Amino acid sequence: MHGGWVDKDGKPIHWTWVGKFDGKPHEIKGSPFFDALAYKPVNDRTNNTTAMKNGKVVMTATITVAKDGKSRVVTLTGKDASGKKFTDMTYYDKQ
Image (cartoon, rainbow, N blue to C red; front, side):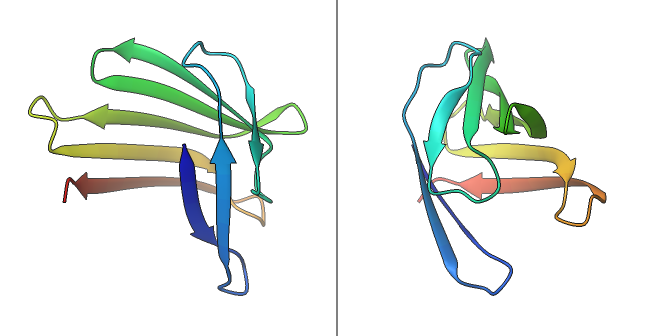
């Protein structure tokens, strides 16, 4: 799995994760925000994700794919760099 964000200076960050959807943390490379991700299936269309840094949970997410497979919703919960709690919901359409 690959991801991309930007850092505090707006420079792109590219990260790579290889693991199993078994609920256990697996190493992530290239992210300054977390060093492990755990994916746990909830049902056929939903996964819960936990992001960790140095063994501590820094963000959780729920990824839900629509029944038709053409879109997904990702809900993130965590703390930003200043320690302030955040919740973010993003909707993705399949291109």
